[in-house]
Image 1: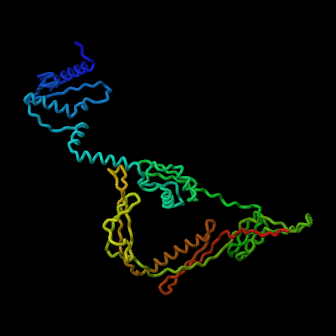
Image 2 (image 1 turned 135 degrees about the horizontal axis):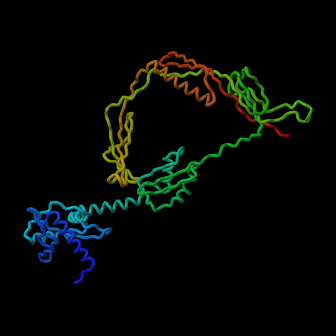
Image 3 (image 1 turned 120 degrees about the vertical axis):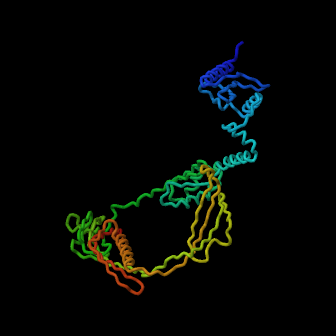
Length: 422
């Protein structure tokens, strides 16, 4: 009698199982014992326990493991065969994917809920519910999202309802400061990548006739003329608007008697000592927020572009001064899948303004900081302070802080020369 290859493999597997059990101290009582149409591969005893053993043999590298072959139906057959031996069978534990789905089928509501959740996740993944904008430095994110919204790309948009190239062509004419826009959708999130336009620098006509004049009064310390004729020397005191380097030069000689004047692009740097007297008034009292301890909260359910207020009565704006704090939480499933629902909590904290005295030391420190910052803005990156002196005086409810500073800076300023033709 010959056996098919699968049956021969099964017999070799059963023999290997019997040899293993005997080495482990089991006494083999029956092999292939049948009770009606149910069969037990091996019945063995060790000590006072009777063991019913099902043998499954798989070749190395098979697609399934032997454990996966014990389905709930096969388990039920083994149980009935064991009961045919007069044994009482009680199930202590079952494990594995087949048993999980078998239990799930018996819980119809849970099974239906799982199927519904899976369907909702599938449908949800076909829509945009979140945005991330990158590449913008000067253009606000809200401006970009508003432009996309105007052209149909917003929360709740079907991901296959637009093409990235079409959106780029329609949005760019409205956003003059952008030269490129791309919208890539992964999952429920749209990743908006933009590139800002780099403006060409202003063209400078190097040959245009210019003068260099004093941008502010000062005492000249150094003059460096790159082109044109010096009109001041170090140690000269100048006023604002005074000519420092001339772009109009008198030729004077006899080489070209018909040409008496030349126009040049007067350029150069003129450094000078300058003086500043800056003053600021700092109030000796200030208004401080004192919270009343009361809170008013309202909740909003955001679904796509729709908003539904929950538990809010009337307007969300206080009739008194208050701070408004908004906190948005996007709902997710198991922290992995974004849902198209955002829960927004708005908290209003009323407060009253209380007049609080400010110490003279604090007022003086604040005034000094303001004046130092202002002076640095006036000097720019090239200027420096050589000497400074502060003075303070109380005038009514204010502390007057004065800064007297001696500085050195470049005061030359190029201005064009109007040349008449003819």
